[in-house]
Amino acid sequence: MTTDELDPLIHVPTRLKIVATLAALPDGDTLSFTRLQDMIGLTPGNLIIHLRKLEDADYISSEKTRNGTVSITTVALTSHGRAALGTYTQALRDLLGGL
Amino acid sequence: MSNGTLDPLIHDPERLRVVATLAALPDGDTLSVTRLRDMIGVLPRSPVTCLRELNHAGYVRTGKTTGKRAPTSVTLTCAGRAALDRYTAMLRQLSRVARQDYQAPAPGVRAGDADRDAAAAALGEHFAHDRLTLDELNERLDATLTATTHGSGPTGLSSQPSPENRSQAACFETPSAAPMRAQLMPRSRRTATWSCTAASAWETAA
View 1: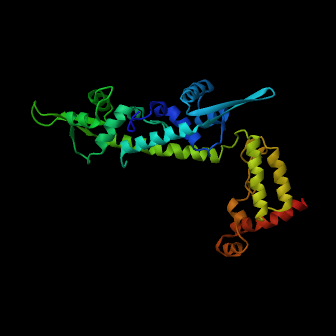
View 2 (view 1 turned 120 degrees about the vertical axis):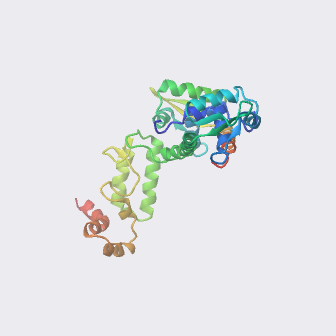
């Protein structure tokens, strides 16, 4: 991928919102699925599809922990994902110039 | 357009490139379509298609200046420039909002163990800086460790040293600054400042 190309995986508005939200976390911190859902305002089904796409590309990592009867899914941005977002924002900045 | 969404007409990568290129021109300047195509390079869709879509929305204006042989020129309209401004502002906001959301969760959002621990640690910090008395600390810690949601409701989690009926500013007031403030402020405000220290005594008595 050339540098002046916008990463199509991140460019989709919903996924951009997900990645930007996760990037705001301190490095190594995770966010629960329900919390992310509250913040972005998506339905669970919708969110899980986008998360799966991001996970397939190794942009995010998710972990499911079972605590008795309840299971909690936490997601975090991988270093690969953080780098991809950095490349994306740089490409966008180059494209938009000083705007 | 509703607030909080990125303009889909501009967000499309190819159209974004066209709009950004045209926006780099000085206001009112035009560009020929062939020149635009040279500048943008090869795209999956021809710039002409992008221009047609943008023209339809009123974001660009295309036209021939003189005669039939003259090249078609294209320019960004005021509406297009405004839409791009809104779009870039939205992008900038996106990362900022994400950050704020994380730092201050909305009241009513369920709190987890990590949140409760963080709030308890913050209370300890406030106690260490003499912003809370020991009694206040114990009372708040009890409330914090049993809180189920964020915010300052009856079951709410709040690491601020002040209860919700007192302003945070009053509580963080240093002793030396308080009398000076009292002279400058109207009477009602003054009592609010003083009640900060008085309230701790009142709470232990009650």
